[in-house]
Image (tube, rainbow over all chains, first blue to last red; front, top):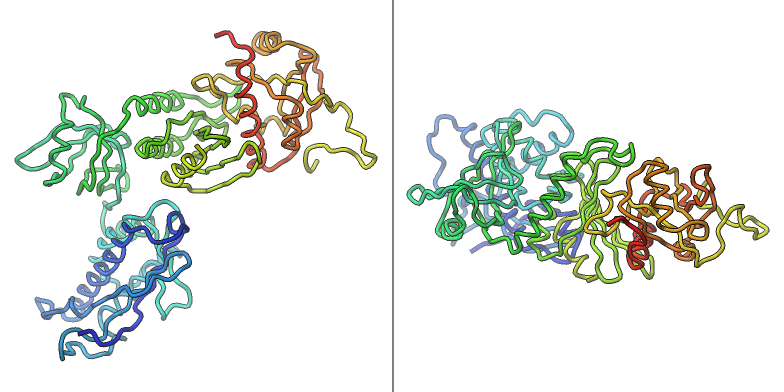
Length: 375
Length: 142
């Protein structure tokens, strides 16, 4: 029986998908990841404070019982409350939350995030071995989306992004995990070790390894052909990145599906290859060559759009080193400009009324909604 | 200049303004701004070097073919073909068009975007390219 609760933290999710009504279901994983981060830091704090003990006390992690009771608006704010006691007639830890390891862990996490955002050193008492746990927080976040950690001790919340998490992990490790959404072809399948080798479209020049499981084995095996000539697959997984060399391997494959129209994808890649070959001055002596971030962003997002059954766009270079994708949808002209730094800007204009919509840092799902709405 | 030229206080049009709304204005489209035979909206908006003046040639003074030949041979520039908008279509998005003859291009003129912010200019270009596309390519070698 849980008896009472205290507000532990508010996780204010903002930007991108969180500006729309409701909370995306997949983002619930962030609440689990946050709990695991707090528990992981708390465990290390306990070990620091009790160096003579070899084990954690029995039921240690059960002391942190977080419940989601409320999701407030503005943008999306799940409020996690901590139960004061757990079980029937048992008060295993009293009701003093102020100084226990979990509350200290919450505070240290907030302070570490704030330090990275401010460009200063993280707290000296933050357990370094726990920094790797930031890999788990923010994996579902997309460009432009943030989790603001708000607890009652703070006058203002601290904003966490995937980039902040990456910096925290790299303080202690040379690699970090991040979501991979790409298209790949299968080069090898090892049914004994349950692994495969994938050549990813946006990945390194040679195939990378990935583990298989009961769900991914069949679709991966079916796409195997000599020399990676099998059908292309949409791959969503958890990648391991090196800060200098990029993607090293996949630690998990979460989803595999066939590319519906490989010819469209090949046409897009062919056009982007053409734009990649441009030199400065391509526009009658003016015009910067498309930058690698712009080309990479265009390759990634356009491929995702094809997977969302959005028609193949027309692709053009911009004089500023960007790439522009254009659709005509009904009476609307929809442009997505991948700027030279890779950030995408959507401008949709109704031809009859002249009414325009603009979205900066637009995500593929939102582009798809625009194209479908006006088609 | 703070925007496209407008009528002065007495209601008199600025010098050189084109007044026939049906006059077709030819626009050359760079080959890289033509994909699968469809021009980019960028071809109907000014770039930085244009200083707000989108070059066109006037159909009342030349043909699409002659405009193309002048552009590619006399000026030595690359063009995938000629598309067109009318003075009236430019006016519908609050842009004026001007006569601007040049020694090598007597039919030269421009659509005046003034110093509109880039995004506003882009929106107008998106409307103009839709008009041009619906009219189709007016001349190309292929």
